[in-house]
Image 1 (cartoon, one colour):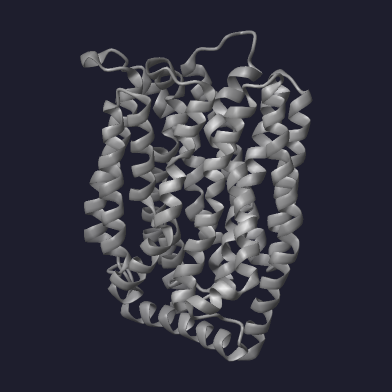
Image 2 (cartoon, one colour; image 1 turned 120 degrees about the vertical axis):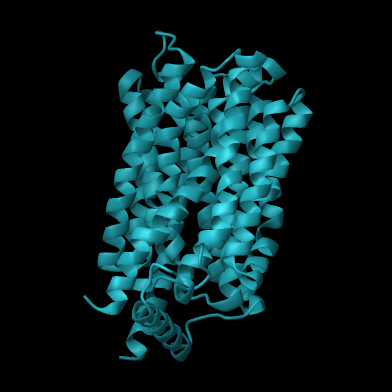
Length: 436
């Protein structure tokens, strides 16, 4: 095993699990409102449309501050900026336990998005500075596994916290918001002390391993620059049409998986009708789609790195997700739950390969700004999907309409993924062939 291979193995053992835990906590704080939905809606008098607005307004603050946050991270370093992000969102998430009116909930969800802005694209940028391209998809998939694992654990953990209802006079959903905020605050201090900005700062890498990894990354950057396929500046990045196509692609992907995330408990409850399952059972069964997503993300990530083809590892899972949702409209009971689980797993499987695409042709400030731009525009779907689905569910046959809308978005995204990924794969092949 070479020094570079030992360095990457150490990274997977030490750094990736730590980043995974950070995103797991972030995603739980972002979507735990879905598990608290029944109690929050009852106590605050929220309609399904008002709940959808509360769930989605998070992304308005997130989108507005995403690009500036990522540019600051590139300037001051990941350790300092990620710890700040964790501390601020943990405090805001804890304050949500004490809301008394819908307006207070809306404002705190908005502030939560502002506080968390820059975290996800910051970690993507950070990993691109540590992992060579040929290992990148499986590494990104390993990090992104935090999303379905958050859903997998979110149901049982949320069910346990909701069972604290009445303790010290607090509703279960208030305990949920309060206790799930604590890890973010504690991890802010862990990041400050433990997260290395560069391989040479990592205490778990030998000097020779850190040097080999740095050299591999520098060699890859030289190849891309020599081939003329890597963009470095912000203005050239903004003028590149691939960026805006990637924005549209991620808009469709995020609409799909946030549509799943915020409404899965509702879909599970309706699939089990007329048994009228308890909220605790619904939250437990909501883990099924996410458990399947964990498996598919690992398999698709490995396949993408092995074959170097981003077209079908992005487009095919999105198409499968769209078809499964269309079939779920006419299904009932366990079959419907199974199809929704398949749609969830397929949609999530596209994430790792999709996020590796911009890293094939962006570098420097272009990478910091481009990743944040794609995530900002894409996360508009995080606002639109819950809000539009809430509106559709007020109409006759509302759930069928909502599922059909999500299916249409995912199928259009699958069509868009083919030319976008093909262009990025061509840039990667040119870069790899330039310098032996």
